[in-house]
Length: 100
Image (cartoon, rainbow, N blue to C red; front, side):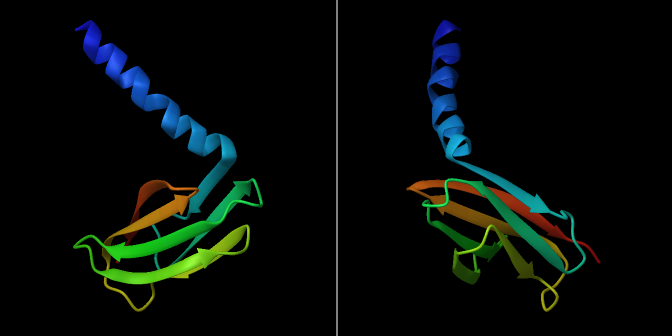
């Protein structure tokens, strides 16, 4: 049982390192059509965003250049989408839910 605790402690710092350099806010979620991704932190960090359908189909890829970026899902069916952000070789994924 002690090994399990040690393993989880080893995984935690990498997630903390990401959030220490860049804070990410995604809102509103769930959304009807549009949502914002707001980045706060080191302005020198380049963030790459990839929006995909839950099936894995890539819908949009872009480099985030502003502290707040708008994503428009109005032409897409209601459902679950994934937003994958990569900053300095660290990648994190958020679920975005589009309501009816």
